[in-house]
Image (cartoon, rainbow, N blue to C red):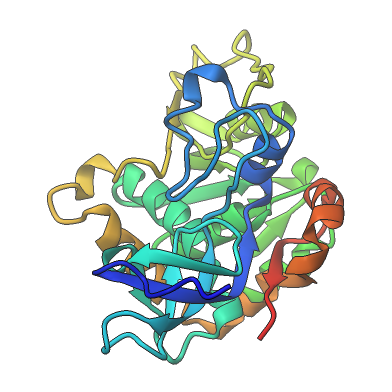
Length: 301
């Protein structure tokens, strides 16, 4: 069926690849978005209502087939759910620079989360640990390492190779550095959060990047949390970090995150792909896989 022309000011986009955000999409897939967050956790262009099923996803790279002449034939990035053909307002799409492959461009939302977390700190400096070597943790460590001494901590020794290729120090939990001035937590587990608190120096701060959905977090605050005067601070990409709100809106922040994906070393984070047609039967297994980092959905050419 001919879908006709896109609405005025919109683009008709044929999907090339989209990325699965495993942490958030697993919670959505399992119907574990808390009722209080049903509205706040809606992604742009979502269809359906929580808990499940919904059309979800926010890491799409596609080719513009119709719309404003300047963008026809260009690749764009959009915070759009997984879908093979769609219309999107032109102001909800960012041109993908020619130097950035489509598969790497899907990292833009995770890069944006990591960038916002660093902005939440202000100046990242001193001894820093990042607990959790998933995509968010690795990108946060990669950004923080521009100005600080950073070690990424994870119980999976295979992540040491990935960290090394990104120029990062790696440690297993038992060998993690202590007396850190700042710790980012991105493991999505209570054990990881408690480890992050254990790594803190006096009056240090933990930036919490994990989202637990409706699962309780068992946080041990009866130890040295109070005597060391620690701070546990949430970071969430839904709002621009306070220190940058005067200069950045969401679109400009996303554009900066996309530009940061130009580094070819980040290709190591994109590790698997599945054809779109197979996703109904494969999605559960993909979301349950603890080892693969970024998983792509490929669309027919």
